Image (cartoon, rainbow, N blue to C red):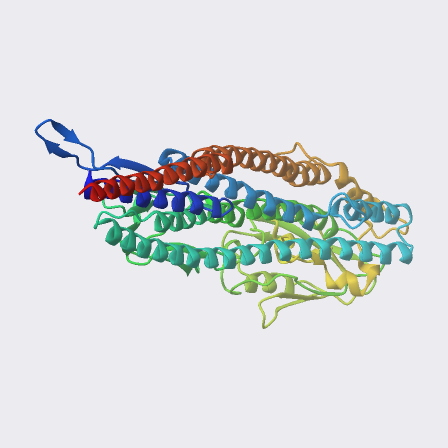
Amino acid sequence: MGIAGFNIGARALQAYQIAMQITGNNIANADTEGYSRQKTTFTATQPTVYAYGAVGTGVEVGDISRIRDSYLDLQMYRERSAMYKWQEKQDMLKQVELYFNEPSDAGLSNLMASFWNSWYALANNPEDQTNRVSLIQQSLQFSSTINDIDSKLNQLRLNLDEEIENKVSYINSLSTQIAQLNNQIVSREADGNKANDLRDKRGILLQEFAQLTDFTYNEQKNGACSIFIAGRALVWNSDVVELKTETNPQNELSLADIKWVDTDEILTISSGSIGGLLYARDTIIPEYADNLDTMCNTLIKEVNELHLSGHGLTELTSLVSDNAVDDADTALVSAGLPYTPQAGTFTINVKDAAGTITATSITITAGTTLNQLATQIDGLADISATVTSTNKLNLTAPNGVTFSNDTTNLLLALGLNTFFSGNDASNMTVNSVVQNNTSLIAAAQSSNPGDNSNARAIAALKDSLILGNGTKTIDNYYNADIIGGLGVESNEAMRMSDNQELIVQQLTNRIDEVSGVSLDEEMTKLIKYQQSYEAAAKYLVIVQQMLDTLLNVI
């Protein structure tokens, strides 16, 4: 037996020492995030061949393998990306819901009700100054709340834009780290060694990568992995193509596009937290901001169309149009007004010193400019018209002026004798003229004392089907399309987020079953290896005793 016997025992001791070390390492890392269980594989050493046959020479550790299911990993990356996308959507929808603050006393629904009630109160007593002041106050509170919501929605988009930029920078950082690990793994495994620890580190980075974006993953024969986004390699071996964010001046808030650094091409990311943030920034928030704009624009237009042809308690003797044109010599139909005028006529009713009202029809053509309009009106008796240095129409009628029968949309577009200023959620407010003089609130359609017909007409807008192609009132539109839509989308996002969390948890459990450390299993192996080690040691003792016996005989 001699030296060969000692070699067999020594190899066995070494093999089981390594096996116990691997088992101990598994036990030590049982709770380490991203750790993959390692397995020791034993291989019989090359036998010695004699004339009578081959005699084994013992055992050695043939392989220390990392237990991993690449198919499960790919599934996890995909589902993890989807989970973070839905979580971001859910979070953003909750934030938008918070801005609208419904239902609550401070919510728009309640403020809108107070706005309508103030018009009803004015209709009941059109000459009461308390009702007029209350209407202004309620309207200002209503419009300022709308302004605040619009501002918060825009700020939220800017905040998301900044978060997207930070996450794109993090993608570049992860890509660089993965490329460096690729290089280390290839270098180590080229010599036949296993880079189990480095592969675990790379796996953790890939999980973080999946939080940010969807991607496809491919491992090459040399151990390096490649990461593709939208069909293009972001990481290839140790090479990285970086991404960047670049401000797009063509959108209203100068939000950033994601681009490839080398080609300047825009990259569309549809999943992961970046995909969710992009969807929230570019789709969810604009959708509800647009709906709010639609509601405000319609309300402003409908109220102003009635108000501009009405009468206040006192004569309207001077006014400046609320809106300016880009150029006083440009046709009004293309002069940059918030509403587009059209060819037609409107009536201007001017009172003289004796109280006689002269009604004159003013004709507007497709080519009429603001300067030409001012000239037409200035040619009438008892009224003067000029264009201000800021391209607004300035009218002065010492005894009073009113408007009626407008088929041109021009009075609305210029903002003459209107209740509201602005044309959307960002700039909607009460016209400063009626704010400063509540007697100019046009509650009447004539100069008769106690006339409340205009206030009643405006209050009746509450129940008018003026939105949704004539199918919804303002209140219906707000409650259904804005608040109701938010609720439906938020519930859907919550359902999908919960569903994805469940899928990810199930995959996590399956991965743990394959790659996780079972302490019971490892303890069983530890006892087995201990017994094998003790047996090998006993074997060496016996070999030594046999040699001693032989030497004593000699």
